[in-house]
Image (cartoon, rainbow over all chains, first blue to last red):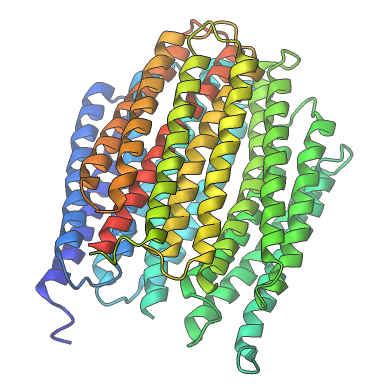
Amino acid sequence: MGLRFRPVETAFYDQFSESAQHLLVGTGLLAESLDGTADLADVASRMREAEHAADETTHAIIRRVNQTFVTPFDREDIYALASGLDDVMDCMDEVVDMLMLYEVKAMPTELLTDQVDVLQRCAEITAAAMPNLRSMQSLDEYWIEINRLENVGDRNHRRILAHLFSGEYKAMEVLKLKDIVEGLEAAIDAFERVANTVEQIAVKES
Amino acid sequence: MGLRFRPVETAFYDQFSESAQHLLVGTGLLAESLDGTADLADVASRMREAEHAADETTHAIIRRVNQTFVTPFDREDIYALASGLDDVMDCMDEVVDMLMLYEVKAMPTELLTDQVDVLQRCAEITAAAMPNLRSMQSLDEYWIEINRLENVGDRNHRRILAHLFSGEYKAMEVLKLKDIVEGLEAAIDAFERVANTVEQIAVKES
Amino acid sequence: MGLRFRPVETAFYDQFSESAQHLLVGTGLLAESLDGTADLADVASRMREAEHAADETTHAIIRRVNQTFVTPFDREDIYALASGLDDVMDCMDEVVDMLMLYEVKAMPTELLTDQVDVLQRCAEITAAAMPNLRSMQSLDEYWIEINRLENVGDRNHRRILAHLFSGEYKAMEVLKLKDIVEGLEAAIDAFERVANTVEQIAVKES
């Protein structure tokens, strides 16, 4: 067992945890951008910084894969997990960017809050799960919960679209808002892909 | 050869066939939901049941992968095939849900019927192909036909969109209908991804 | 080293180069279709031919994988790379088809040109990178540049959408144009997936 936890492996687990921590920062900024009082340009600029920091971590993982002879699990799975975590950040950065660019007139903040709550919960349990990659313990609870959250997000999403289509909004505003709510759903889906990658790693290692 | 068809392998092939059978039920309900006379809430509720039954089969396959020492093909391919079949069901469930939620005023039923026909044909040949995973026979006919159907679906899709954009419908109705026809196309694409997974399994095993 | 460059391997590298050459033809036709003076039916028909030629190359690669005992890298990676290159062509073919079908009234040609420039640059460096698969040299420069181009394309994309939503266009025209600009972005993303596949192959081989 002493051999199993080599320094190089520990470094991978630490970096995946770091990557997930960036997502916690990202969901926090996303929540801020949608609270109805935000200075969007300011939040977008901080989101851009958080996205760059996440990129750094992703590239550091890829570099380590390329320089390491024995990796804790398959190289392509490390690559898939690192890219998957990075994709979540890209999705959230995109939403904040759209909020700033589209100049939406009447934002249905209360509706979108449900999706942001789902995203924050996804980020929390993803961050909590990453250190468990080492022992491969409790990972099934994590991906079952992510799948449940993705289902909740899916139901929220359709309810939000039905509301947008209710006739209360002009077609052009619906077009803008639909892009934004689809961006939120894409971020939830990206969290689910991370969980699927973790599940596949666990299936292989079992 | 006697050894090749062990009971545990047979169980996998049976479960993939069961999974594809759920898709036949799903395409039937989808056809019903679009025939212009359906009680949409009733069809949506039966679709939800079919989707749950499909989920059960998917999870049973994943459980068996985790408990089985020798699998008929790579664990990750079994996983990909099971998830792929499940994705088709999710797409079709989503379309029926949108039909119920969006309250479309003038449904171009005759146009959508072409796509539902493609989906029913996809489900039929996918269900017919699953038992052939055992012998790896006739699979190329299956994926060539799925690719052909996906091309037909693609052409239908663009024709339907061009019709929606013709000026006959209001922008808001186009937004609703576009979501629905994109849902149908997503289901066809999901069938194609299943066929691609089968093709990759066959390439590996060859 | 003499053994490493066997004729059969050379054939794979030649076919990937051929596949990338089709994409150069495709981006050329795409540029033509958006120059504001094109006979769209004529360009679409030549694009369809180019797409068929690309399909031929893809199928030839898959056939060779199935008939070859020792492949230069993993069968599934050859498969992923061939399909990935083919996906780019399908995306570009789809855009030209939409341009022909949708009868857009006021095409913001100057905006879309930026995305076509990104696509042409992607095609050029992808075509230049394919022969390097043999030596696995200079591939990191290729995928770093593709990632940079994808980021440029992403920023262009959001800027174009913000312009479409500015109030200058009617909702129905925005719906059409949004489909077209999303098609351009999908083609850029498809180039990025090709680069990611190349990166994964290099990670495995390193």
